Image (cartoon, rainbow, N blue to C red; front, side, top):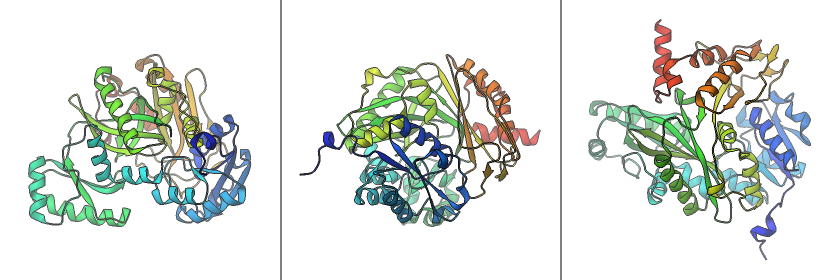
Length: 460
């Protein structure tokens, strides 16, 4: 007889962490606190990673390039089998939203710490995700829930019905790639052709869709947690509008200036959407917010880089909740238990030039990190650590929490002032300057503000 959810609860005691860097450290800590053993993996470039020393097993799975190591599904599954792991946690990035990998993990008799492959597939395709959200009553950006056809005349008609400006997006896209803003009709077909080719190269599919381009929106997120027993909650909201080239730089919770009666129906709709598709684990609904209205853009079916700001305000350990959901446990929260207190900011500290933003590899010769009430640092680096040129430039996350937004901003200024990284370039000077900006301090920013702010700084 197949095991029931109750029988399968706690069905693994060892977790392979299929990731690297600060998120590998974060997951390892959550596993240890839950009494679980961990298996760390690495590429040749990460052999000296500090989290390898604190794992129960540490296996090198391939060369430095991600394609031959952290994206090598066969190598990861083999490592899990050799180390006796019963589950795989993908972290974020790499294979975390790969439906085929989630399916392969389950077929290998292991537990994928995340949603099912079918949920990833539904929400990973932006068109099917939009269709599912519309069915659940989640507000969406104006535009059809179907892929763009090849017929030029039909495309022109769709654009006119939506109204310019429009934005063209790859159906399988993400990470800020595969999208173009089209301000007027005479550049529509060129934008379509360029985006189709970019989508083909980046995501293996030429499928595109079109939506209304909102000119001054904010980027708002809603965090959800679901179990396999039909329970789901949302843990408040985040503002991730401070972006450069569609990449988040600073995140905060809660989003400033949004009244509870406006956000609550949206949060409940997100929960309903999760229940309709049988979602399990943690996930994030991303919205554009303009003139008091929310518009769904995508769902991230994984742990988010910015999850700490929600942990700080909600008091919920999101990584532990994710692992417990994968074990089959009943969610130990109901919506009435969720209370969000105070304000939190997260700064992404990257190994990059603070002016050109070009990556900076090398050895960290000196490291000083801030400490004190309401300050948290998630990192994997130390003095003597060699920052590799092969991966994302994120080396640390600096998180603060305080009773009010103004106090949290002041705390972040002090925390940034007390953060020292030498031997490589970092974006710390840029972050310090940003937290002195008046408009940001007042919460008067949208997703385009940071790019405009940078242009003015360069021109000065």
